[in-house]
Amino acid sequence: MTLTDLLKEKQVKFMLLGGKGGVGKTSCSAATAIWAAEHGLKTLIISTDPAHSLSDSFDQQIGSEIKKIKGVKNLYGLELDPHKSFEEYREKMEQDDLPEKTQSLLQGLGGLTGMTPPGADEALAFAKVLEYIENPEYDLVIFDTAPTGHTLRLLSLPDVLSGWVMNLLKIREFFGKFAGLFKRLISRGGEVERGMEVLEHLKNTIDVARIELSDPESTAFVIVMIAEAMAVFETERLLSALNEYEIPCDHIIVNMVYPEILDCAFCRSRRNMQLENLKEIREIYDDFNITEVPLFDVEIRGVEKLKELSKILFGEA
Ligand SMILES: Nc1ncnc2c1ncn2[C@@H]1O[C@H](COP(=O)(O)OP(=O)(O)O)[C@@H](O)[C@H]1O
Ligand SMILES: [Mg+2]
Image 1 (cartoon, rainbow, N blue to C red):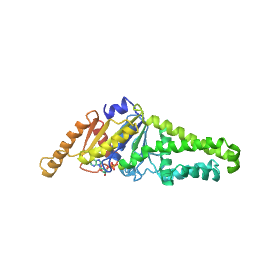
Image 2 (cartoon, helix red, strand yellow):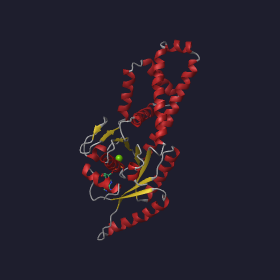
Image 3 (tube, protein in one colour):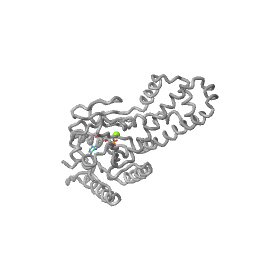
Image 4 (cartoon, helix red, strand yellow):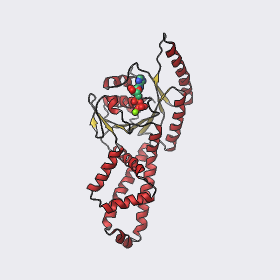
């Protein structure tokens, strides 16, 4: 199944592109998003890399609010800001009139379950990602992810979060048996209930997302790599983690393949080295769909250049 089939026939709802830093994840995500949008899918592209480069790639400002991408109809972009999400979440809790006491209770219980504030930041940012997963407004959501290590942490968060929320719910249940005592401790019981509602909602969101992300009918993870030996090791690491989280993946983009330039000995040598690696990659991943993308002679920046890349990715070049 080619990338075209993935979007046209299978009509996956979520596509995640991941791999090592600098291999072309953002460029390929952006080009894929453009192709999808131009083929009638209302598409949202979200960057989960704290070092955002969607704005650079599209050559227009995107930022932490959903923005229409200029020059492509049907396409919207968002650069997720983990810190802002945490702030927003806190604000939401405050707006919901969650009293300080409940919030500090939640924080205290979080401490009990070993959830440190930096982890909470990322976890809540992920909760934000989950909101988009639940959002039926878009036909396709493309995630331009951060380099492997960070993305793996992000993907493990449903488990972390889910365990965290479950513990809180259990503690609530436990205290429920001593309702009188608990109420006296907290003094205003209703506030606790409200906090628990938020948590239960979060737990549901996580469960839905986990099901969606591990369903090959709705999700595809595409690995972006370059034709070098080191990249094969990284790909192995990524694949085994995806396997562990049950995230379906059978597509690889091998980017930046040296074109044939006969009168350049240096280029020929690099190209031959890459062709060797490519052969090996094709052998190792013989049940994967592999798309080769040549090294461009210029940076891939702006909608027009990205469209060129999308033609290659979707076999229209
Ligand atoms: N096939 C290619 N040919 C030439 N330059 C490329 C190609 N793919 C990506 N680039 C350039 O490489 C740099 C890194 O690409 P990017 O998509 O930001 O990688 P990542 O998101 O994996 O860090 C960018 O400047 C981009 O324009
Ligand atoms: Mg990137």
